[in-house]
Length: 155
Image (tube, rainbow, N blue to C red; front, side, top):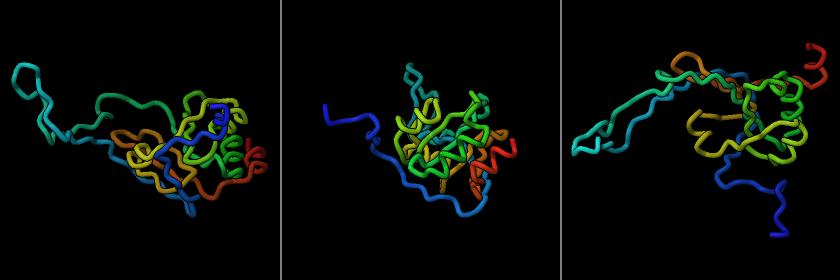
């Protein structure tokens, strides 16, 4: 245990995503298909296998998710200068990198985008910005990544 350092921690199931090569925006349907019957507790079936529902029909997801590679200094600098770093409604997720190092640098909580997150949002490259758009989630790959100096000049 003495050899394990938090800044070296990397969870299992991380998917290495490439840096995006072009600006792409796509919509992702969050509908879920039940893989099994859900019983009602009285001997019947409440929801049958195959039942499909979209959670965005019932709740609004008001946060924005930004996914970057924490090992890519350009992406960390972009996030810091982008305006997302100051927003409380933004969740930062890493596809690679140290959550301790990036969290300390940005002075904010940092989470990992594991394989389930990558598959659910159909992430293909980073940096990506994910937010709700009606009944769907909008995934925007940011390209080109403006330099931190150019971003600061815009603000």
